Length: 335
Image (cartoon, rainbow, N blue to C red; front, side):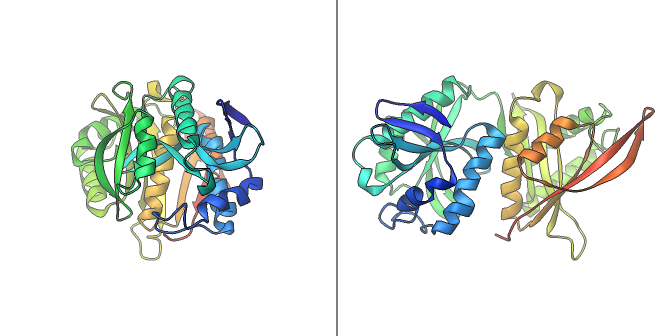
């Protein structure tokens, strides 16, 4: 499906048929000479392209195929992808083009088009690009795209620059939990619990319990993200490991958002970031239970390809109404 057009390019959704075209980029040691490794055809077909297709399904955007308008040839990819950058979930403009098409302005043309699309069509207010300091060509594209360096950080042990374009202060920040978030997080969880619809409890948790939990999460590097708006925690997502021997590879998913922040793609951003953090922390199974009446949450988990493992019939009886509990899980290989 075509997403946007420029003077010389068409950007469309990637399909499995693009494997060879992307292998000409991602499998090329010249094009990826500054990367830690190149990719095999199998890794592209079974990893890179499905990841992009999952992004379309979950977020409505991702990395798109870059095609020459004159011939229809796919020469690489470019787009907006949800990434975890230094503990914060960001929308990144990324671009990867075949070496033979470098120096023709295609990367800048595609990146600028993606920037304009993200700002005008997707309503984004902050965009980033993560680039190694030695990658002068990619840095030049980011700078022509109106981005400036915000900071340097390590990404998987490799120094990267975080290039940023902000049109205004971001309304919502999705990031790792901090110790100072405990009180606001406790209020957020308590508010959702009192709705008596979504959580396993209908009562707020004691503040001392949340403070202890956050302290352990920060100490252990466990997977927990929060959504912050104006200094207030308005949502959370975590996949905390079970404490029992033989079960510590299992993360139990919990998440929630305050009512006024639902339906704005924040839950999807929280879930994607948490999934990545959990995998990095050594979790290989993430499991959850969701009430069947919570159709919005169940649909989100479906989009992220959580598998249905069973149903607990009439598992909750609250306010005179029975509700089923859906049991779902996601598996992935150890990092």
